[in-house]
Length: 386
Image 1 (cartoon, rainbow, N blue to C red):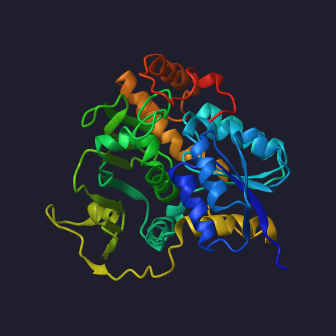
Image 2 (cartoon, rainbow, N blue to C red):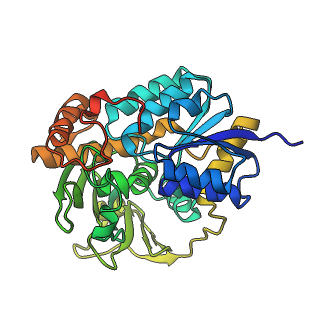
C-alpha cells in the first residue's frame, strides 16, 4: 500500500471546511485525514455525522497530543497560527499553516526560529505561487534580461465585501480578534506576491482608512507607497469597498513594461534600455522604440490542492515545497509596516521596529469593540486557544 501522510485539521471555519472538501473529493492522494479539532461543537457534529471515521477533538492540544497525526493543518483565526504551529512542531509534527503567518512579526519571527530548530516540515498556504501567470511575471522580473525594476503599481480592489460578511464571525474585523482588515485578511497573497516578484522595499508610507466603507474598526481602504534601495518605487492600492473593483499589476523595468490585468499578461520590450536611451539620445523629446511581445504562461494552476500535495511530497520524498513557512514573515512585514506608518502618520523604514509595532497594536486591541468570538485581549499574551 502506498504511503500516505496522516494529518489533522485544526479549525473548521471557511478554509478548514474547504480543506476537508479537498480531501473528500480525492484531490489529496498522499494525505490521509485522521482527525479534526474545533472549539465549536456544531462543526464537530457535522464531522461526526458525515465522516464518523475521523476522530474529533474540542481543542487543538488534544489533537496534537493524540498520536493520530504526523502533520497538522492550522486554519484558525490569525493570532493562533504561531502558538499552535510551535506547539505542534514541539510535539514532533509537521506543520502547515494557512495565511497569514500571524498578526505581528515579532511572534512570527519566534515561530520561524522555533521551526528552524525542528527537523519537521513547516509550510504555508501561498497558493497564488502556483499560478503560472505570477510564476511567469516573476521569471521576467528576476531574469535580469530587462534590467532593474524602476516602478511597480498594483491596484487590487476586487475584494468587495458586504457588511454581512463582516458580521458573520465574532472575530472578524476587530483588532482583538483578527488583528486588522483587508491587509491581514484579503491581501496576504498579494503582499507575498509583491515581495516574491519584486523583492522587499526599504521604506513604506501608508494610509489605512479604518471603517471607511463598512461598520468595522479595522482598515477597509489602503494606499501604500514604497521605496527600494535602488531608487525604484511602488504603489499598492486595495479595498473591500469597490465594486466591481480592479486587479491591475504594472511593473516597469529598465528595458520593458509588464502589464497584467484580469489574467491578461502583456510585455512591451524596448529596443534600448531606458537608462541608456535617456543618457545618449540627442532628441530631447525622443522615446525609445519597442514592441509588444507575446508572453506564454500556459500551465496548470492547482492552487490550494497543489500546495498541499507538494507538502505531502516533501515529507515523503523531499520534493520542493511551494512556500516554506518561514517566508510568511515577508508579506506580513509589509503589512505591519503599512499599519505602523498609518498609525504614526509617517514613513517607516525596514527592518521593522517590531516592539514599536506591537506596542501600537496593543493600543488598538485595548480599544477594540470585542465581539463574542474575539481573541484574547493582549496580543503578546496569547495562549494556544483559537
